[in-house]
Length: 317
Image 1: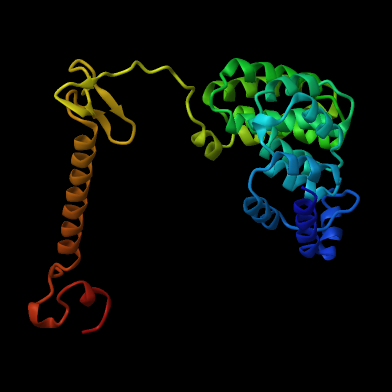
Image 2 (image 1 turned 180 degrees about the vertical axis):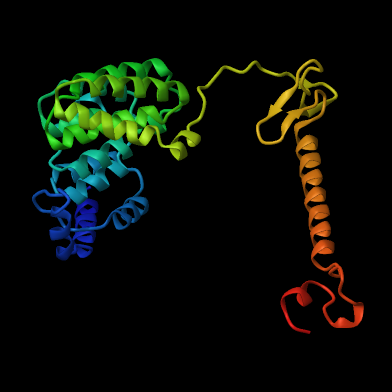
């Protein structure tokens, strides 16, 4: 283990770029012993290293920010205990280490939601930030969670909306926006929460709300939000063809949101192919009519005048 750790630390130091450290500091990316390595390089190193939980623990204990980020990438989420998560969260010394650890590791832990509830009331700046950064990550990656969990997360957001510390308020805003973009039901709930925060006297709460409303009411964002998941009834396989699902019941008509209503009994693929062929033929007919109109002989012009067609209307023969 010691030789593997030494080799990896040597590799990180070989990629060190002191010139980047000053630029990172301007964005609040600080920490003692920082090497100035970019994220693509760190991801490549972690990919080549592979999953190794004991090595991850050893890397974390070095307290080098880049080594801590690599540790979050090579650690095993299933092997991560709650005590280790607590110890790692208490060691956060920069927002990039906090966010990367939540994104790469904590979000896949079985104890993720438990840690959200526990850390959201903590006084330490980066520990509390971790709670709301984790909510934002779970909104994207925890596809199995139901809306009740995120409704509870919105209540945590309301409680923390008055925290004026920069890294906390930005994480609360991130969590509110991420929750609102998960599905349409949570989108409405997040907007309701944000509008209630606008009525507060706290300047921080109003900023969190205004920034979230600006993004969630953006039409392009709104179009990308998926509807809430509904449990679909299982359709048994057709005994005559085990590789094909039964067609829809004859009394049903499926709505195609781009081209109208799909006739009952017509398979989806045939309907789509039929619509595309019809659209192509109509466009072809339009182009043919347009060509005949453009290249027609202008009225009142003799055929031997040299002005016979589209070119003759605008150019000299």
